[in-house]
Amino acid sequence: MRQLTYVSYIKIWAMIIVVFYHCLCGYSNIWGEEYSWQTVPTWYHLSHILVYFHIPIFTLMSAYLYGHLSCSGRYQSSCSFIYKKTKRLLIPYIVWGLLICIIQKWDLTYLLCGISHLWYLFFLFEAFIIFHFINKIPHWSKYILLISLYSACCIINYYNPTPFMGIGYFVRYMPYFIIGYYIYFILERDIIKKKVASYTAIACSLLFALEYVLDYNKFILAGLSLLLIICITILSKQNETQLVGRKRILKLDKYAMGIYIIHHIIILETNSSTLGQQSMEHYILYPIVLFIMSLGISWLITYILQKSKLGNIIIGS
Image (tube, rainbow, N blue to C red; front, side):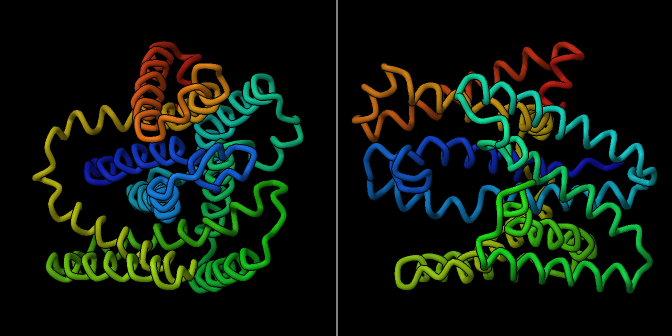
């Protein structure tokens, strides 16, 4: 089966964005006043821009890969599919969620809502399972149900839904998942030319910047960022053979899940430490050092855990 190197490339960049974004959140209001020690305009605006890209990229690429694998006949058995997603997403969510409850003194009930940054694993598990069974419904009924689900998510998201069972996150990001799945089939036909994708990407970037500065309409920004991500995917696909270090990219992609799980814990523990609190006033140097440190340590821990069967289960490899 053909490996999509360009997807791995995009996912790695998305992971770097996620880690850097979490290092900036304390210098904005994104995590709320409790976790905001000072507002630095540059970091404030950058974090508010990155929020439109990091998780949407991961969600689109997850669904995109699902489309690729389902076409190859990888997901014929529902029992096997549920087992694999439970092993890869739900078990790491529970294990690391319990660890967070112990270390950071979260109430166990948060496990039913999507605890800390691990809410994304919970969301992905729900998205994969629900989409898998919808996808098995005969043609027209499936499309009607997916359109209904997409519309319902957009409407419910507008009314700030309950976080219970990850519903709030589900309705926010499931539309990206649905789009990502069908984007795969569109791009496989190679009907969009490189020049069109390039010019559209430039236009979306400029319009996004203008909208962010002049109006800041969240729905318009989300739409423009989505279109920009799709254009980047098209350009990456068409330039796949030119990607440097392809084998290295695929190796790095293996560590993405572990890095996502571990880096946030390292960031919060560092921020709450005496040394971290003393260093926060250095608002240029501290987030950069924190980024390098959390990325490096989480990669090292993931590398070590992947040496054993139990470690692979714990980090969903």
